[in-house]
Structures are given as structure tokens and as C-alpha cells.
Amino acid sequence: MSGRVGPKPRHSSYVVYCARRSVTGQFYIGCYPKNTLPVGYRGSGIWPLLMSIVKVRLERHILLEVVGMKQARRLESTLIKQSSSDPLCMNANSPGVHSRKIPNLLLGLTKKQVQAARNSYMRLNVRTHTQST
Image (tube, rainbow, N blue to C red; front, side, top):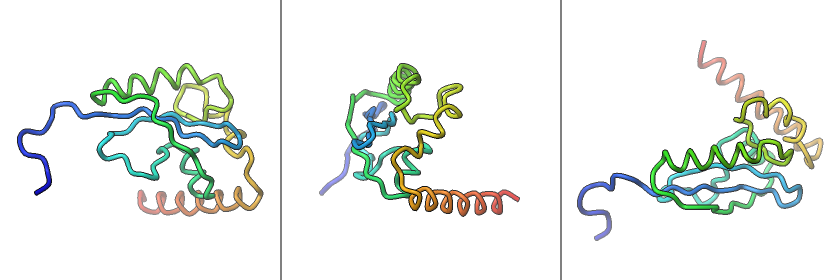
């Protein structure tokens, strides 16, 4: 018999991770609940999504395990802020960082990969726009 018996734990364990593209050194910092972390998960931001579209491999490294979502988000935010001036940091959620880093999102990709990413983005954008109107 498997499964948990008894009350659900009040705080769950979270991991703060770094997804890195070893060829370029680019990286993305994120956090996720440890018990539900998918094996191939590399992040939910623009850059990890772009890398998955063009089938570029990212290596995930667990930086730290913490208890509770608040603590994980706080640590993630601190690490992103500390890395925001690094041009290889691909997190776009720091104030003023995204527009500066757009050219870096495509670093090391072939023209074919960039076109595939553009086409996927356009299809996604059309579906989203159609669903919201």
C-alpha cells in the first residue's frame, strides 16, 4: 500500500534551481515544489521556453532545498537580483532587465532555430489572442 496516511504537511519542500546552457554559460534561476518537480523541467520563463522549442538542452542544478513557498520565492528573487547585471542571466522578471537581454535570448542559436522559435511564438500568440477575444 502506498500513499500518505495522516494530515497533509503544513509546509512542503521546495528547490531553488539553476538551469544552465553549458555551451554559452547562459542560466535561469527558478523554484519549484520538490515532490512534484518533473524530471525534464527547466523553468517557466521566456528563455527556458524558447530553449525547449528549439530543442536546446539545459542542465538543471539544484542550488538549495528550503521549506515553504515563501522562503523559496524570497531566495529565488534574491538570487535573480544578485545576477541581474550578468548578461548571461536569462531571467526577465527583474525591473528593466528584459529589454536589455532580448538579444542574448538568441545567443548561439542557428537561423533555423530562431525561425522555429519565432513560428512557435506566433502560433502561441495567435491562439492566445483568439481565445481572449
